[in-house]
Amino acid sequence: MSKTNRVPGRSMAAAFTIAAGAMISLVPGIGAAQAQSGSQTASAASTLPGGASSLNETYRDWRVACAQQGTQKQCVLSQIQSQQNGQRVLAIELNAPSSNAVSGALVLPFGLALDSGVTFQIDEKPAMQPIRFRTCMPGGCLVTVNFDAPTLAALRAGSALKVKATADGGAIAPFSISLQGFGTALDRVGTLSR
Image (cartoon, rainbow, N blue to C red; front, side):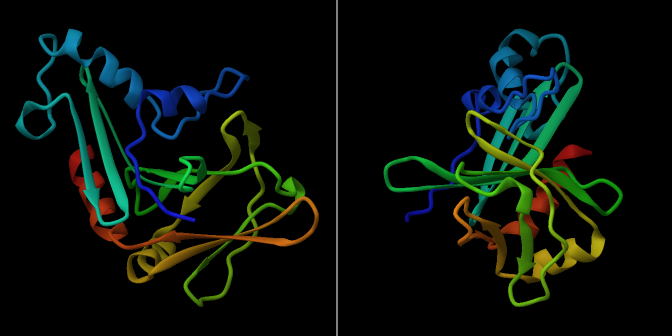
């Protein structure tokens, strides 16, 4: 399996709309902001570097994306892993840090036992408590993630965030999210979000 990191865009936002009216996307609002930014540049000055209406940067295995829509600015960090055929294996997106914590979403493929949830483990540290799947959509199954300050410190120092799920047949389905560039990307999102 080959890993490809891509910046989520408009199609990603559309792929992660939940039917109940709540919008949960891998880049909430960024796709729409990028599409409308041209018409709103005259109405509000951008607070992104150089007056940009959107920004995409790479920090090793993590991407930072920001978009300005009017006076609102949305910044996230993300990682997308794809197979060689382009099919997405997993995607994780985290919002800008707030009160020394970070929240976001993880999307995993179909074929997993949803009742078992997922377990996170940073390198060889003890595994965290299981987290339930929130729902499944056409793009995969969604897990809401919340990392507190001690977990963020461990993520910054770690090399891999291991995700363990259970396949529908009962076998363990392991995934691994590289943490190379995570700390720098998280700091950048925090700075850009101010």
